[in-house]
Image (cartoon, rainbow, N blue to C red; front, side, top):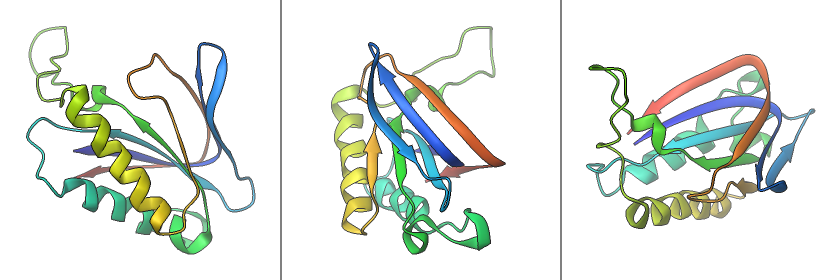
Length: 144
């Protein structure tokens, strides 16, 4: 499993012209979490990624989303698992199929909410337009 976590002051996901998820947090900052679920991920990898999203100190003042009360925009992104070592076309063979990946993304969202974090989401499997105002910029890669 891979996640790209970016500190943002605002971010949104639009599907077919409708905003389906958005965070606007100029004071606390928030996190845009792009998450790719792998075909061979450990059964509990989602727990590690959830913990990292909640606890990594990547917001101003070395605060985490959990202790800053900052929101998270969670977006499933299978392309993070693309293999690009050979040829000119990425291979998506390492990405989990939708019927496996979607419940994992939902588990991450539920765990973040259980921790008291406000979570907005993209729409699984849809063609999404993701916009963000990155702060810093500050972006980290998490692998579990």
